[in-house]
Image (cartoon, rainbow, N blue to C red; front, side, top):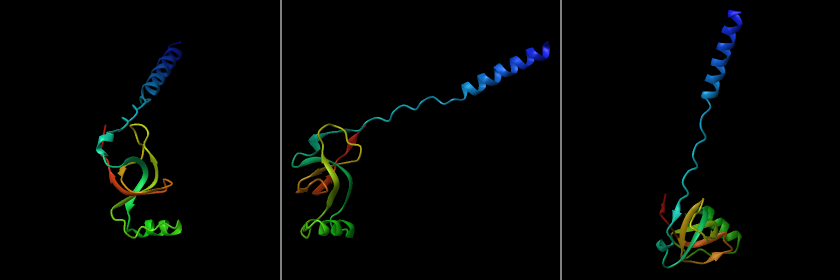
Length: 115
């Protein structure tokens, strides 16, 4: 009889330890807030990436699309959307140049986000 009681107590204790070891769900990371006033001369875009306009990858992409980036300096945004809200899950940038269907946007500067 005592062996059954001991087995029951040990089993209950083991289940309690296993249940207590489950980690709590991690809180969601804060959503960055973008201050659109940081872009007073251009348009805020949310781009998958930004690269130097003179990089070979950007030059090859532009050439394949028939876009002349010869006089463009600085950063270009790649795969961009005009930001309609106040959050961007990729790279928020302020762009003052032309947008070629959102695939390439020229004249971009990074925007600081606040958490």
